[in-house]
Image 1 (spheres, rainbow, N blue to C red):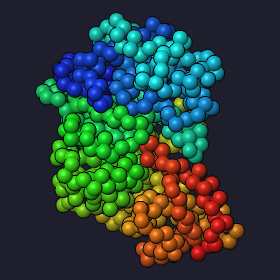
Image 2: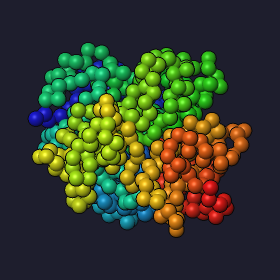
Image 3: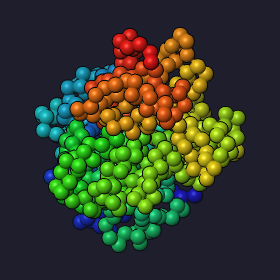
Image 4: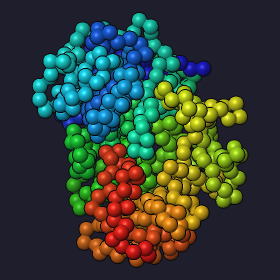
Length: 540
């Protein structure tokens, strides 16, 4: 059994490639020597404030150098990083920091007033670290991050208890359909999982000598377009750093496709993480509008996770860069990389169809494997290395991470069928499934069809209570500019491609779906929006 501690890997990169870039955020840049020294300084400050191995350390930050440096600092001395959704309001933040037992919090200056209003409700937080973002001055109850970085941090600081692959990393997930849950990853398990798809791979049972031998040159340049506070962003970035690469993040706090394309051209970005059409469509629109403005030839690989990525947007990428590899990954905070779907000019597009990893299966309600080509519907499950549970929630842990056939399993919550060739067709999340007249309708399947209509910019499908059907299918559509809204056309478009019961009974035009910065939809809120509109249009 391996014992990968991520800080050991990053310290080795800093030794081998001290002058190579590590983190780039607009004009702010850190090479690996600076990245390591700053993390050691912050780690020393946290120890001086009484934190000890196993304590949790929350990142209440926008994207930037502080996010990854503070994670590195935590890993150095066995603290547990805790991601924080920066869109949360007071009560949500208090719940998160209290549930996570946060002993320290690093926060951007923009959040100073909000933190000031809640900190007396969080007596367990022993250290507040203020990161300057130009929005004010450091309050007297916090320590300035710049002082932490310049503290006398020992070279490659290690806690008195040493480091271990058993040290934890938390990924809090949920919050739109229930209270946030802290997914507990052992560093060793997480490192091996993201390393399985790495370009520079280390033996799963290896050690830092394997890292030292492999690092004869810098790794790839990775652009994290999505928030680091979410699993897609932070895990892809940690993977790039572990391979001796560098991470580019964008200074703007709202997505700007032009800024992203400028960064690709300037930094010669090779890989990029986005979240579906919410990121992909504006990028393609910008390229269509000014096809000769940006040189994106350095880009090799674009990865999306967590949200479906439509064929039309993928085709748009390939129009502007024909050799790109476009990858949908099947997974979640509980199980990243359980399967993937690859689109390229040669391979064509297979949106919604995934090749499973060797450790992933589709299971029926009674625990059988779904037979290929049978049409049965089952839940996707990953076996082997995965989270050890949800923090302080044994009941949900037992449901999501059961022992099946003597192996630890992770139930992803995604329903799928298995095609005759062994690939799977993803239907959607069980929590969003609509039951109409006894038939199951998965919103993602209907959304995929509606996105193929030339008038549709974005779409969400929800179920509303219905006296006759139990639930009726409703669609909320964001129209493309200068297109005419015609509900009957959209309903007919779905009926021509799917069973009639899957077609929406009602379609409403909205200005926005309110996607989060991670590109995801809050279906609970959208159901409320649709319910408010449902009296304005008769059922179709």
